[in-house]
Structures are given as structure tokens and as C-alpha cells.
Length: 252
Image (cartoon, rainbow, N blue to C red; front, side):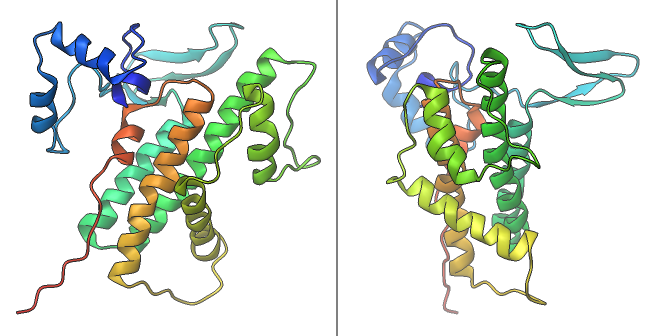
């Protein structure tokens, strides 16, 4: 997945697993040895895993801006010291992934809520990112979601995406869509519009929802990137292939 779809920056296109294996062999790397070595999830994959994140630090006195290459439009500019993010959806995902890991380490439902809130936000931000690109290139057929022209999220999925991709639709039969819907309900009921004075969650429910983050957020994002034939930040692919979380009971 990293070879075929990630933002590793290599101009080579890997259409099959065999393509990636030949590429590694040319660099004296045995594929099967590599597979065994990287069963340790914390290791980084050579050549195919871009470790650069979405948020960059700006040194004192430096000035950094983001300019649209096609139009020349300056999106924003920051005078250091400070930080700058090149992608809203990507930055949201990084925040969500960090909170997801905190939820595992601390056995924390509130941390999972943070992960879900930012995870759902990054899905919405990615669609907005694609809409912005569409509107830039289709001034006479713009897609508008505004206070006076509200568009439901489901309509963006069912109507806008096929329009922007030339007819390709999201496969809703995969677990990704179902798990996203479940996580969005958690976001709505407990985080955005809380209706109770407290909340409860068993460890098994916590583990289930943490695992659903892999498919409902990371997997959903991968689906969207593939539909638009856009390179995927490596952290999203890594999150999709993260080990499952399990609850282990110990009888003493």
C-alpha cells in the first residue's frame, strides 16, 4: 500500500506488488526479509514511507507562505517563530491519530472522543479540499455549501464525489462506511451535542471503537484518496494497518 499509494515522492508508479519487489531488489533489499523485519509496527519502511508530517516549524525571523502553483494565489503567510500546516485534513488526522494512541495507552474514552472528533473533521476537510480543487478548475460549475445553500454530508458523498471523479462512486458495502457512521454518531451524541450528565464505556466497547477508527477513519480516507487518484500521507496508511486492540483479562 505504501509503495502503490503513499506520498513517498518517488516518480515511479507501482501498479503491482511485483513492481515494488523488483524496485527493492534493485536496491539489494529482499522483500521477504523486509516483511519479517517490519512486523514490528514501530519500524519505518525504507524508500516507501515518507516521515515528513503536515505541520512544519518556522524559525525566528523566517517567513513562510503557501501559494497555489496554478493560480499564484497566496493562501496564507506566517512570520516565525511559529508553525504552518500544508493540509488541514492531514493535520486533523495527525491530531486524531495521536489521541487514538493516547486512548490505547491510558485506556481513556475521553481521548477516544478527541480522536473521533478530529477523525470525522479530517474526512469533512478532505472532501472540502477536493471541492476547492474542483471549483478552481470548474468556475462555471462550482459546488457550493454555504449558510444559504446547505448541502448534507451524505449528498456530498452520493452526488458530489461522482461528479468530481467522473462517475466513480464510494463503495458503501465495505466496513469503512458503516464504521464511519458509527463513529460519527459517537461524535454527535457525546462530543458535539451531549445529552446526558455523564457517559459509560466498557473496555470491550472502548477497544471496538478504537479498532473501528482504523476502518471508519483511516480506511475511509484511503478509499477517498484512491477514488481521486491522490497520493496518501503515510500516517493514514500506517493507521489502517495498525495492530488490533484487545482486552486481556488476567485472573490472579
